[in-house]
Length: 214
Image (tube, rainbow, N blue to C red):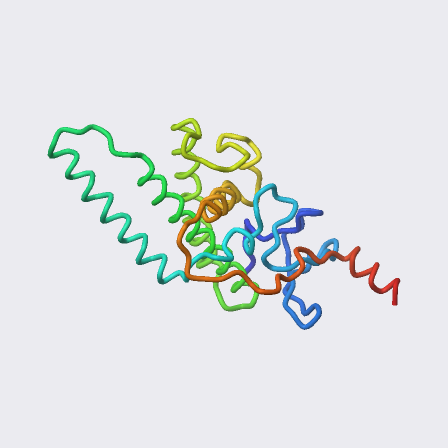
């Protein structure tokens, strides 16, 4: 069963059918239509960071689950305390941090699930559930930043810009922009970047150039 609305699509021809192939002893993605080849983490030419750049220092998913639970509990306790003394509003930064980290985790899981589907290790239903969850979480972050006029956002492109409405990302690229900025500002992490980063993108044109020099 094929997906009706995959998020992993060819950014060159917009082809919706992709295969996992071996390139230089590593797994890569290849468009069945135009044969363009790219590394799984790459989302070029999206204006937002690719998955490796955005999440290279992100903690493991299980740790992030625990952190989100703690953030939610802290926010609930603060809300209850504020109501008890008649306060109408809390500092919005705590709410935004929860929305940002929740959306980033959902984005990571959705992309990983779709890659698993290409490896025949996840069903279409599992992928679509993960994609729906990621899109809802991304929209919640964008809505917050739009309502607060971008005061708490850090990225170059504002939340209300129509570029974030483009398929296949549907706002998830905005999450990667904001998460990268948050980590750059000194957010805690439990991973170290790769000592030797891999090349950002492999295209069929680059492959042809290499063959031409041989």
